[in-house]
Length: 376
Image (tube, rainbow, N blue to C red; front, top):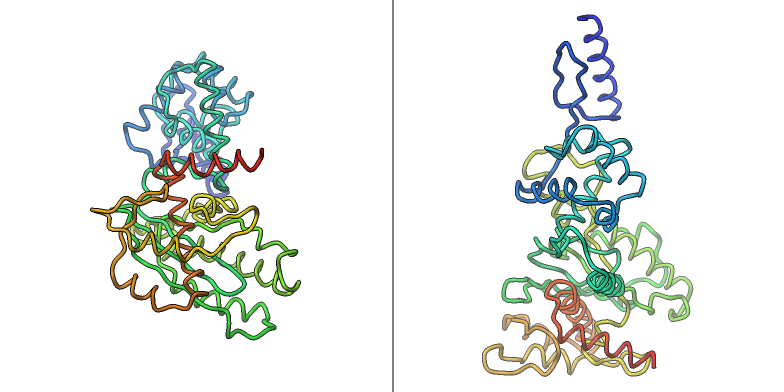
């Protein structure tokens, strides 16, 4: 018996070294012992309770609402029929074919679910599908609820052939706390990839840290809207470099920063913090779109900046922002071209906050009602 247990323990240790499974304890008894799997969870006790209750009490139809393959749902029910309800998230990993990645995805889906009922009628399901479809129309990739619930700030980044601008909006008082740009006017006409990389490194150092970074999937990035193929290629290079560096920078990606601060092991995967707002949404919200063409936004930006939060009623369908006087003065000192560059980043981050974070009804109606009119 002792030899059998020793062989089992050696086998499990080897598997652990190969990262095939995670084992946190091993016990020896006369009965057949199951391996104890460890699920690294950042969920609170209340959230874990909700997850377990949902997995234990849900029928097949309810579980199918989450991103769970049908064969895994059958395996979950089969496990419960044999062993009873799940008592911890670690036990869920014992289900055949259900690994850590899939379990984490299921947990997020359950936590972010707004309806607490075990079943949904057809009306509720239709409403949820409509909301999900609208969310997909707004931003890509979809942002999970955990990021939105913990979000304290966002940075809008506007990349164009003439320069790059950024605006950081804090959720506290909806305050503009950082607003700046870099111009591409003095750059050489032909730049090698290493030149682009050096330039992006310099830009990254200036962009403030935040929970998320919002770009726009703009039609201006298309080759038909560029003055040359080389300009289009450079735009793609810059966009890809910015995406990568913002996600992998310890200063910019909050998940990497937290790992560094707490001296915990580095994660096996990097959580994405860069998202793309659908093209022209900010132009629709701020009425700077005439037909399919964008018009100058300086007048709109002046209205945003000169709005007195306490006494004035903002005519635009967006949440009022607070702006320090020094940022207003800095904006007023710029040329019209640079004002436009700055304005695009500000409108981008305001649009994201209103549509995705605040779920401002006026902003949603303004954006989607315009979309319906254009289709007609």
